[in-house]
Image (cartoon, rainbow, N blue to C red):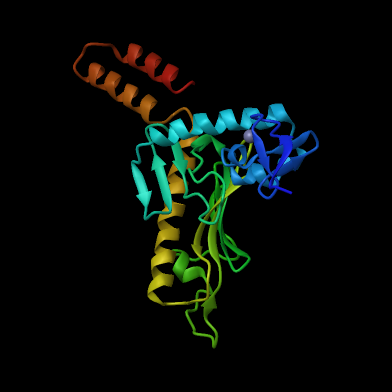
Length: 254
Ligand SMILES: [Zn+2]
């Protein structure tokens, strides 16, 4: 019995290796087609039909073009990449994935909300509709001051196992994406801990600015700039007070 059965891939028609194939209701998908899909998609591929899989592979190809043309305007370490001019962001692809290793690029508009989770507890949460709030008591001084209480008193065991930022998405294929900050026992106050809480603060601040931008009311940069221009025209006598007020009302949607 060889590894290659007579079965052919329902997506590309190629040979299927029995050890690396994935099964769906319509038949098997070969490993090379699987490698073109996102890990999230592969984990649920048994419920997909051929045309859904083909559409997903097309989507990934287009997304890889976005990734190629991505020009980061803001980055936090190798954890979070933002292209403010194109309103796009990405996080690193999961390191352990045997599937597509190119990060998926998302739009700012995909962000529903985001939260910092430490050992299963949410410490801070934000989003376009609510802004950012610290969960379980407002404390200033950033994430590092919040974790484990504001008093700063040292308890016996001050280890953290897992810290990540979860970004909930409104997106066809992914309901969320995660930025892993700490994934093994780490002592509070250690260099790694301090570095990662610092990164968490920077990422959350960037997410705040991204979502504040997307949800800003119409009286934003451009309207204010326009009014200023007309104010200058008024000041130098090029337009009358009446004309200025009319223009201002228009720009403010009054
Ligand atoms: Zn195939």
